[in-house]
Amino acid sequence: MLISQFTLHASTKKGNRPSFIEAARPEVAIPLYEAMISQLSTDLGKPIQTGEFGADMKVSLLNDGPVTILIDSKNRI
Image 1 (tube, rainbow, N blue to C red):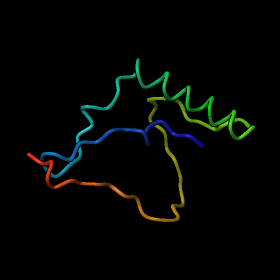
Image 2 (spheres, rainbow, N blue to C red):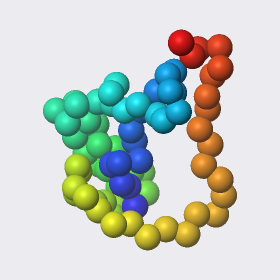
Image 3 (cartoon, helix red, strand yellow):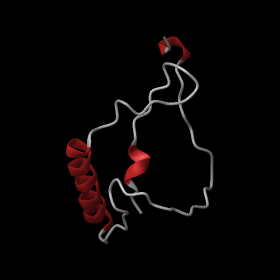
């Protein structure tokens, strides 16, 4: 399953919360997302389950491992 919301770029340079200001605009991100779906489908030889790009989706997940967010303290303002 490929979910578009997991592809956001987050900046942690300032404040306590990540900023998504530099995330790609839909006119750039949608073709990239669709190309990724196509490439995964080709590589795996089967259809890829997806959500609707930009939609408010409710996703249930059992995560087997931590999420890693790199914060470079030398790159903060």
